[in-house]
Length: 347
Image (tube, rainbow, N blue to C red; front, side):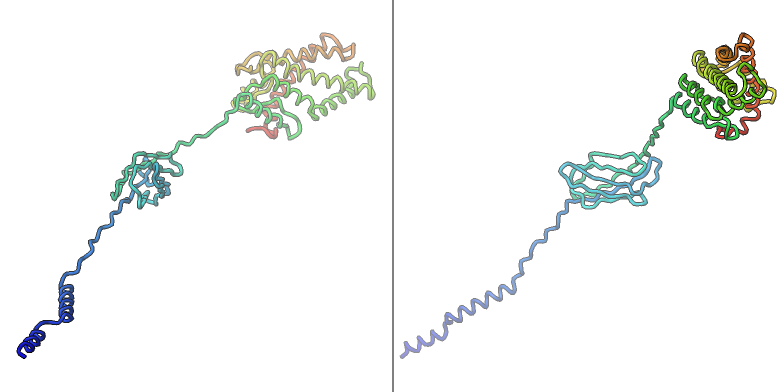
């Protein structure tokens, strides 16, 4: 009986396994609540990109706006930016590496600088970039003296007294280029075949017909035709021998060089002398062999087609003298009157 009581008493005093387990779990819970919670370690973000800034000016220190900036490097990303009105530019998030920076701007030479090192996480501030103004080259196609003479001759071929009468053998240029042999022949041909030239020849033949000049030609249509033919031959021979053939041989200029300045006396003497003095292709004044020889040659040829009664040395000398005198008179008119009423002339 006593043993039974003792056993019961022991069972009451000892904790049951379930209670022991619950007690153990409670202890653990208390321990977890009271113990400090473990904290996660915060690692700072390690940014390796950088910022590149700079300012662009001219060599004179003036800010350059809208300059285009290119940042390139082998195996590296390419970046671009543009300067603002103050010349400032900025490129963000540039990866580390060695770059070449290139700047272009309107009116400036391209500016390039290699070896720009961008270090991880370090911003780069470039020194002030000075761009030089671009040199502007203007291409001028200079005309040769021959080409200049061609252009001047084109202007001369438009010159007409009162817009009608050809005035081609006059130059109003201050320093005209000499004519080539081909240009001298061209000028003579252009003058000889002008319709107005034929018109004056026809009028001259009519006056001779009315005055019965060179009576050996007779009267009537046949007589007029002979006179017109002779006058035309005179015009062609005088124009070509005095204006092209001999000027080419003697290298002389057959044109009248309008003076336009100086006293009336000096200008008059200059005009009268032009029949016997001319300018050579070398620009120097010299005896006018071309015009004098041309007059005598043309007058000599006239013996081949004028009436026999009118032929001889007298006809040659008379025609040559008349041609020379008429040239001096024509130059006087040119210097003081015709130049004023010639159209298409250069001032």
